[in-house]
Amino acid sequence: METIKMAIAKGRLAKYSIELLEGIGIDCQVLKEDNRKLVFSLSSHNIEVILLKAADVPTYVEHGAVDMGIVGKDVLMEQEKQLYEVVDLKFGNCKFSVAGKPSSANGKKHLRVATKYPNVTKKYFTEKGQSVEIIRQEGSVELAPLMGLSDVIVDIVETGKTLKENGLVVLEDIASISARLVLNKVSFKTKKKEISPIIDLITEKVN
Image 1 (cartoon, helix red, strand yellow):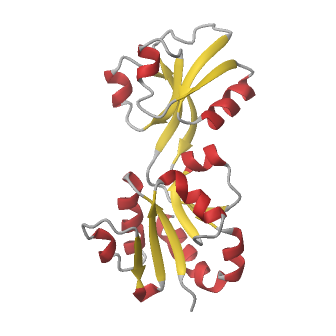
Image 2: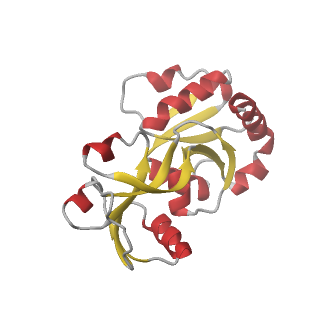
Image 3: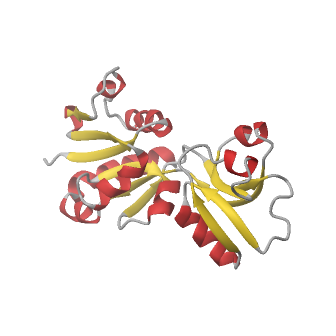
């Protein structure tokens, strides 16, 4: 039996991903140990788990370095990689939103938008016919409108607490986000016998 290589996004999704795997009967004890390992062998089910930064998961899946991955829809929308998105895992729920000061976008023909997600932002405003200048950010995007760098921001909003504490509000919602199970296109054919039962178990668990 061939080993299935699975990438899991580190951070907030990792805990839920491990719970999901345990929920379908996979022993994930080694994933909970306090160490700096990034590759784990779940020998009882012939699965190798690789912990990656969320932004790297689609790249590893697309290029076949891993067979499948668990990552947020936000990353998939931003990167648009060539892979199969097979199951909405229904955890890690949040939204892509446009946010700013309450009157920041009022009637402006041209908006300056700060974001970590330039592709999603460009696509959204292009479809609306809104002229924008996109300012790429890596840190706390909430600072941009406060410091006059941008009119609004496009970011992931979970509770809205950070926005509220900085005097910002959600102006528009772009899309609902959750974690997704994704597959390498070649692996789905060459390892179908090994992969299909895992997909079926996960699908049954989340529905």
